[in-house]
Amino acid sequence: MKKRDVEVVVVSDLHLGTYGCHAEEILKYLKSVRPQILVLNGDIVDIWQFRKHYWPKSHMKVVKYVMGLIAKGVQVYYVTGNHDEMMRKFVGFELGNFRIVNKIVLEIDGRKAWIFHGDVFDVTMQHSKWLAKLGAVGYDILIFINTLVNFCSRLIGKGKFSFSKRIKEKVKSAVKFINNFEHTAAEIAIANHYDYVVCGHIHQPDLREIKTDKGKTMYLNSGDWVENLTALEYNNTQWKIYRYSDDYMTHKIQLDDADEMPDNEELFKKLLVEFDLKTNR
Image (cartoon, rainbow, N blue to C red; front, side, top):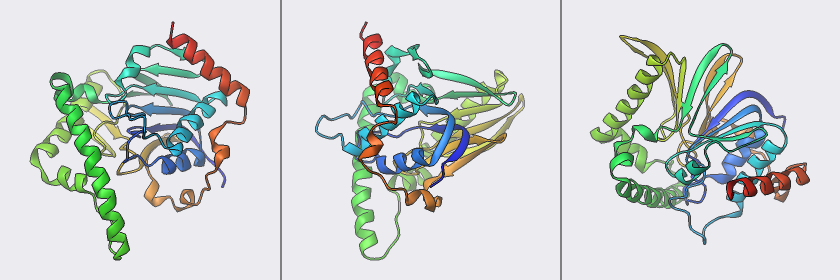
């Protein structure tokens, strides 16, 4: 399958290391594109829920494939999130075309895109982190149960449905939180004259213009790879939401053990060694 050339790809909330992560689908998507810039916008490896006994081979393949992209010269930004907040002590780390940051402002086609994970707007994260972590465990369990229910549903010829989506759509407090999140991000972007504000965190893919009495900005959210399986792509002056469910050609991509290593194995190994040395000084 021929790869699609994309100027900027933004993915977030992969939650590698959890039962809900769709690692094989993530890898198929990454293999289907040839980005100039790849932004990993937080919650990539779920360190909160990391378990030594649960780290499937498919999850490691995603990590190694991204490292392979770095070795091949793709500009990769790792934007820290709340589930991988441990990475924040490495903010400022830079090796060639790989950087670890809390936020970035990309200038593309004369416009500014402000990109960050979004957990800074989460009051629970700021004041009751233990409650946020408990909620994350509950969410992972809900996704696991949902997976079993959908498996049974397919056996009897019925479609899939999402417990968490239903909750987000029906519970007023969840709807209010999402609306507040989006408008807060937009208001700050407008105040700073950013043309785009790009977030993750809330697992709600979106792309729309938000106007206030002080101006307007384009609000974008990359969604997640637990439920929605979405990403953001920028190409030819346009942003769009990529949806794996609509990309039937990518579904057909075959995965094998060769995906574990980039073409330049020596450069890949050197990159790992350099990262280990610099982060342990």
